Image (cartoon, rainbow, N blue to C red; front, side, top):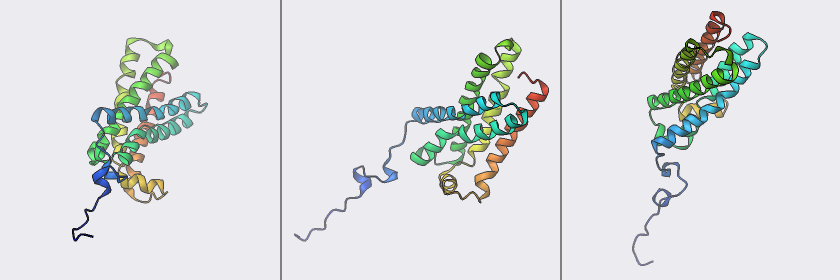
Length: 188
């Protein structure tokens, strides 16, 4: 050695595997990921349509949809944490997932399941009230999504109230909506 200190090379300086190295995902890609992830909630629609018992549809579809709609948000929080560092931002992204899902669900109901009800009142209802319900429920659910809660849940540790309280509220709102709409008009 010639007496000079060797330069310390840190992985973050040269594109190492450190999680902090991942460059910030462009906003449009983040929103696209969130929207794409909401497609995973679509099995809840199919299950509710195929269910022979209304109670099963009222309970199972909200659980499946609310857990799966923010899948893109889960991926974003775990893989690109810089894009989702604030809880309100995460809740907003979950709300966007709810919006995308609600619109897709409405298209499915209008053009696949209820073709006999294509009147203007049904269309207006279908593209407003259920979409708004999905946005509200997903936004509420989003307050439980953060890296700490996701990693705890992946380990099976769901004892903290912050992991389950918001999803329970979101699922209850969704289930109450399903019951109300079915009682009010079973064809909706």
